[in-house]
Length: 525
Image (cartoon, rainbow, N blue to C red; front, side, top):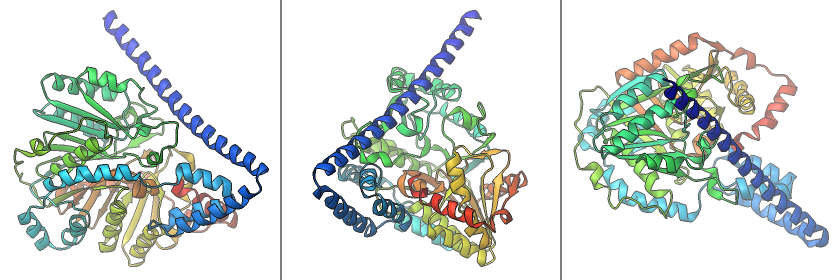
């Protein structure tokens, strides 16, 4: 027993050291970036004192950059803050935009993804029988599914069983059970992984399965995990037989792609079972720690043909992120066995959103649900930093008489983002949108439900980063029992939430001014 206690104590000490090292690395990266920006600005200022022409050059470059930003095919909400910053502080604006203003990846990165997609997308074909059935059903199945299929390339599936989890802790237990069934491969892709108690349970199963010969792969985002793991995490996972890669490693040098992060949460088992939702693989999601009150998160288990889309999304990211990696020679081996259709009502449509294709699929799905709603549409999101287009869609639905509600956290994880979120309440409340704050703690779930007919569960927050900068994924559920379960979960959340609609219907002039200034930061958060 004493040996076990000593080992557990050693593991806890090691994990604390890991977290400290991860935080130190993050601080180092931030300081290095600040030093680079400061050095560049001081160099330009010093040069400007010696050369009067530099001041004129900066102003000319600033004007040219403003015109370039204005002409970009992107949301106006991104353009305005940068235009104002560059016009008011030309030198600072030029430098900051160079480091932080690029929304999309380099041409080489885009080409890499295009090469992988050219090989993968042929495996993502629409089953014609399912398409006909969905079209006959009409309504949301015909409209929203048509956009995701024809506009984005994501099929709609029948015969896929969905299990909804109103608590991430329940999803974790189901996930652990499903991992035990793996025979061929296990794929995990997560924004954040904490090398703590919750992940230790997953790692134990993964290591055992790898030893049995299962192809086990783990993929995580560097920024999302930087405070949770250390630089030797990959080596330790590889020692267990778990093949591990990191998305877009943060380096303390000029790196345009750093603005795009992998925010997806995907588990795939043999191409037959899949999990996704709002939760990462970290202790706070499963109530092992509660830094912000009760952490509310949700997820789903998929079984059947619909898992194919999740499989392809993982393989795309795994193979495209680094040209120097040894990639899969072919993808046919992952799709050799047909996946049986299960007895299940309705349809499912997994989809993804990428910052590389200039198609805001996540925002368009939400707006489509709003436009089609006739009775009610309810959203929950941890952050509410939305575009004018989304504001208009929410307001128009409410003005048509639809019961439009948005549920946000009662306890924030980021105070500045919390204040920014609240700055959007007034315009929405004025047009009839009802705003609720989740009293028990931090609501991290990203969902919507409408008219007892359609629901979405996934990783997509209602903020600029999720809607325009990050790699995201979600699932639309049409006319199936889990839609009713999601509605009931919303009703339970509303019962323990505080409606703040009327509090924000009228604001003082000082509050309006402060919130207007804050809103300029929203696209940069």
